[in-house]
Image 1 (cartoon, rainbow, N blue to C red):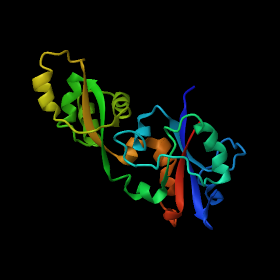
Image 2: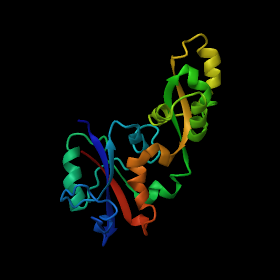
Image 3: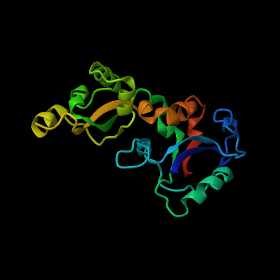
Length: 218
């Protein structure tokens, strides 16, 4: 079994961080576990979505530490997991996640595809919807397109893949794997586990500046 990364939430009240029990209905545990902390979402640490918060191309810069003022409920599950390695320990205020922009702001992502599919990605800055139509127009089945678009990692920069193709890849097999880039909304890249079933549910909360999320390992 692999390691999972979780996001827990706390609320500032009376000068200290407390467990926001009012959010239990938004994030029910199935089946119930008896734990009191509020876990917003979790995903396998090895997933590329971890790079939203950690890594050289991270979109949201977390404070890289275990907060010293954790609520008792969150402290109970977070501290033991970071005793020996705090690489993925962090926290960020919910308002600094800019959740109202996740469905419109774009990030550049990358993956490798067979050389014969490179034309679908154009100059490397097309949006996912355009690429999906192009790939399906090339005869790929929907499940194959989903496999390509669903395995992307955050990219450091865009490249002109037409230039790469003509000058570096001349004569290579059409099955030779080539790195390509394209654009997705933050929500598309985050996926269902982090966005639809997780952070999106916080978007309309009042007083977002009183909440923070804290990472945990499991």
